Image 1 (cartoon, one colour):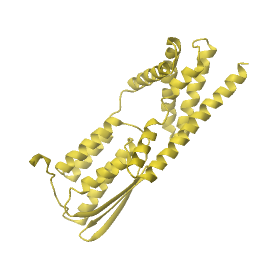
Image 2: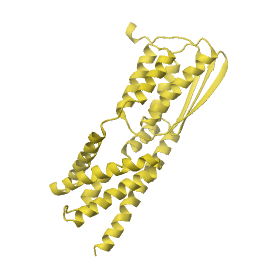
Image 3: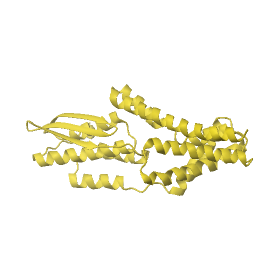
Length: 267
């Protein structure tokens, strides 16, 4: 039973309470950034604040672009806001942040050390770019096989997916919106698939395009939105669904634009 007890500490001053709020909002910002659900982010912030005996009436309100935290310290209400942006997906960092939060609730750490640990998680190197390109190609190829492609089309899809991923990664440094990023991904995938058919390297353009654009389909966004709605975070869930709808629209425009000219010129 002793192992299941949560350690409790208290803030010694208003300034320390504000530092706690800044730390948990930073943690929440990272969770949203790397693709965690909003309800999970809100729950994590609430649990860490609950580890302090004199932080009361903790209220958290999260959206995909901002986090609000309000609590009461010695009968004084303190409110903070932190902007957030879901611009990537990194399940490994989400797992590290979840582990950090669980450990903190069990045994609260010095705030300076906690912030340092969070920064280390944020600054962890991503997977080797070459490995990411290889994984993108393999994922595209296997998706095409799943939809009925032959071996030759799957090989074409491997290269189309890999090159499309490289091109989108290159253009992402210009900080385009998610709509433009997905449009470019679909456009490059369709253009390269058309080139493969034109050069007689592949036989079915549909299978190649479908396999390649699966890299840009908003599967995680839709899943998180539905999970938020099922957790009563209706506003966050609807925002996620609207974003997924616009991503799907961007993909449709990118593919449709290329196919329009390809079919017109191939007659």
